Length: 469
Image 1 (tube, rainbow, N blue to C red):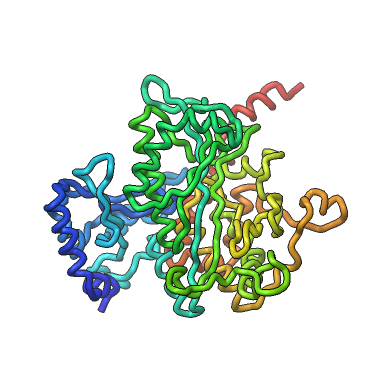
Image 2: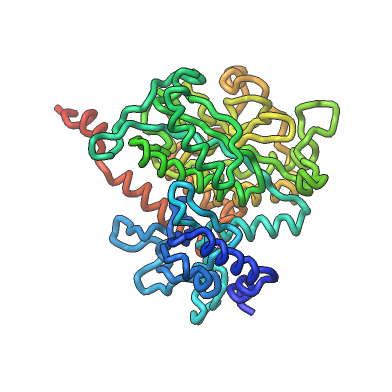
């Protein structure tokens, strides 16, 4: 039996499909977005009349392989990842992800798992390895089967709400001033916040808190943590919600990591923990302290930190995935995690123990594809568990003070080119991008770096136009 057959014929799935079809008819839903996630985290797919849901659920839709790379071409004019001669993928709807859109009750969305074509000569009907979302689900399931543990994660999705011009295009001006934690600035954005929270709640996000951060129009609105697969889907949904609210409110939701220098960037810290069961069914958080030190994680947590520290350079390429990401690391004074160390409540390190039982992985920004980072964190922590990796003692000093006192601290990569080289050399992190996934990611991001290096910027002209004599 092929992967696509097993997926479609899974026990209980036919009943799920029938139940969704009933909802479509009962709720008057007329249109359906069948979506998946590209290598950069962009939401791709097809739209269909909702009455044809059962067809998409049982046969799937077809789309060119290159859609997993946004159907972009590189600087040489070649399609990224897959050429025009490539076959077409098959996207099969997951009925459990069916969700009406609260801003358009006649329309719903459903996530899809991607497969190779049934008629292909090589691996017909197999899972498509360029499907980052499908990869995370499979990698997570394999890790849980091996260790009895699963990853629970929460994210801190920072973004800047910018003013739009008369044509609806974004400007470089925030809706509010860069006053961190200022309630009056938060209140100024309250109509927009209410709408985001309303839509998020309707789509299954448990919104828990928020604040105004220290950049123009910068908000962080948090939803509750959960299994990594679900959190990645919810971050994707949250981004879609913000885009819709921006359309309605005449504002632009900016997820660019560093649109302004001199103020904080848009981060997306990952708060992670490993559990041996579900929290509401007696499961235990294996990152909780077990000894006399109320902050120091137990053995599993320490080995997990060891794995993350071991692979931090390659992980940086996935958590800071754009050329612009590294502006965040070069702009001094804003607590960006440029040093490859860990500690308690220490915001100068790449990983900190933000609370007992919870690690905050900080080398992540708002452009992240969470399906890639969660998969890579799982692989890195698995390596730490397999090899009993010791991360060394936590750094409790400000890392700059520690360095002044003689500590030798390595930096994480400080450019996308350096990070790509680190990823290419790390087989463990690369295993989180199995099969064709690494090929697609590397092609896409190597081209992005080369296009940047082949560009004359305004800075070049200002600095060098009158260089001699």
